[in-house]
Image (tube, rainbow, N blue to C red; front, side, top):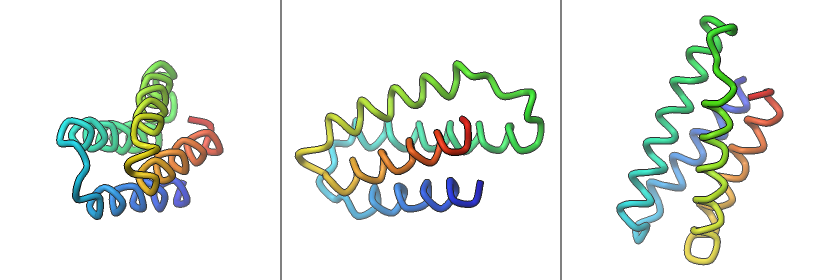
Length: 92
């Protein structure tokens, strides 16, 4: 899981550096990051408590954000895709 936490931190840093990111996109991504962190905390403390639908809906939202941001913010889009890859490798 430490790789996933590191990847989430990298996305957070990309968001911090993306000065011209649309406020709505920024808010959605920050909300998703918070949700994913809470999901990870829940999974680590009680693995049976994780609900697969939560992860799937977050993954779909992240992929949509990556597609929207690809042209204007390729660093953020790449960081989002790295998070998606790390989530998949972690089985989430």
